[in-house]
Image: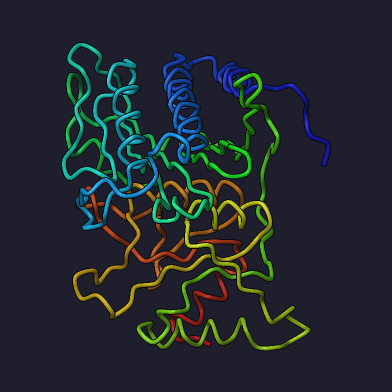
Length: 338
């Protein structure tokens, strides 16, 4: 694939805006502010080991998880940067129990839900981590936004994306017109288009799941994983296991190279009967991205992720996401049809 050279993310956003004469430029401005926040976090991640910001902060977040120092830094970076950007009416963070208001007088027409640092349990061992974001148009009329503005179906997203901090820093996002990836050139501090029009393979030979929990899965899920590990040359099996344990890293790899990622509900933790992943901050934005790249995302009982109406800021869902044909096969096993 021939990749355009020298196209910055700012130029790409403006070129996309010009295709819509009715556009006000506010979404473009919002994306620009998110990009600045991403650059700030990227710089901190790359300096973490030298700046003594690795390790745990001693605080436990609303999810009951120990907060890493970089989690807090990333969360505060987003809050400070976005509160006065003028494009948002309300925010929500995976790290905070309640909604986050914007500064008085700076209210806009969009909402932002974000996971400031996904995969942070891997920070101390230098595994790729990332930021996930989701943008909706507000439902309320004006002024400060409210919970109802945030509790919208994933299908209503106007933009979603992630930034992965790895061997290079990459921004991948969609506004509902394809998925595009940009790589940060640290020498000039600019993201350049490196992966235009990303499309997932409909079927692959990779699966990503934490098999340590297999005894707690449903029978259909256990049978599906056994299926992908069986040898059958006609269907290009067995699949190879690829599981990092950082959702951004696992799904970024699958988006580029193909694969299916599964995080089913299990019976191990009665306090989390619906699974572990958060709908607003993880499942819905990635479902939007993956569907725009030709893939599909469902729950382990067959519901389309993008059609779920959220009822809580921290609602959890099981997730099966990947190439369309791979997900269809998994869906058949989960429904007891195979």
